[in-house]
Length: 345
Image 1 (tube, rainbow, N blue to C red):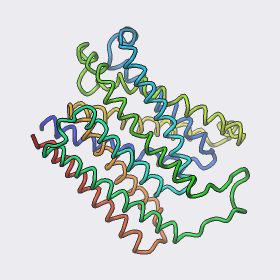
Image 2: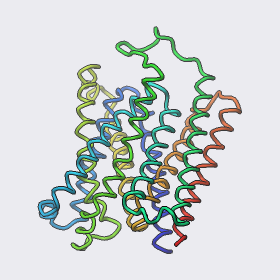
Image 3: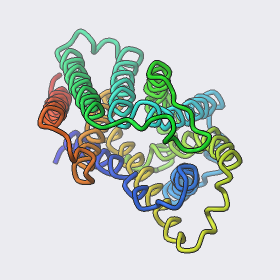
C-alpha cells in the first residue's frame, strides 16, 4: 500500500473517531454541559497529548528548549484561537441547533483549512489539474454541507420549539442572527488547529532529525497547541460552574462512571487528532491541503450516521431525510474528488 493510500485511510479513520467522540454525553444526564466537557478537555487537551509526546519524542524538555520561539508562539496562538472556537461551537449549538451549527462551522473550517495552506504554502499548485481538482473537491464538500444544513433546518421546522416559559432558569433565547454570527465565528476559528500543523513544520522537521517516526512527528505540535486551547476552554467552564453552581455535581452518587465517559471522549477526540497528524505526514506536502477536508468530511458523515442511530431524525418526514442523505452523498463525492487529486501530477 502506498504512502498516499495509507494517509487517506488514516484521515478517514480519524474522522470516524472524531465524529463519534461525543456519544458518551448522552449517558451523563445528571451532569451539566460544563461538567462532562471539562473532563473531556483536561484528558483530551492536556493529559493524553503530553503522554503521547513523552512516549514518542526523545529528550522532550531539550526539544522544546531549542525550538524556534517564533514557531512555538505561532502554534500556541493558533491553539488559543482554536479553544475559543470550540466555545463558540457549543454556543452555536444552543442558539440555532446541532444540524445547522455543525454544517456551517465545519463547512467554513473545511474550506479555510484546505484553501489557506494551498494559497500560502503551495500557490504554484493552484493553476494545475491537481489544484483545480482540490478546489472541485472542496466545492463538493461545501455543497454537501449546505444540503445538510437545509435538511437540519427542515427538521427543526417539523418540531415544536419550546416557548420562553419552558426555558431553564437563567437561560435566555438567543436570536437567530446572533446565533448565526456565533456559528460563523466557530467556523472561522476551527481550522486554526490545521494552521498550527501547517505553519509548525519546523517543529516536525526537527523531530524527524531526532529520529521521531513520520507517524508521530506531529505530536510535537499537537501537545502545545491543544494545551493552549485548554486555557480559554477551562476559563469558560469555571465561569459556568460558578454561574450554574454545578461543580458539586462531580460528587453526586452514582455518577462515578461519568468520569470514564469524559475520559473516553478525550481519548477518542485527541486520538483522532493524532491519527490525523499521522495521515497528514503520510500525505506529505499535500497533507494539510488534502488531509483536512478528508478528515472533516468523514466527521460529518459519521456524525450524521450517529444522528440516525440515536433517533435524532425520528418523527421527521421524508423531505428532510432525503435532503440529508443527498448531502452525505455529495460529501462522499467530494471525498473521492480530493482523494483523486493526490494521483495528479
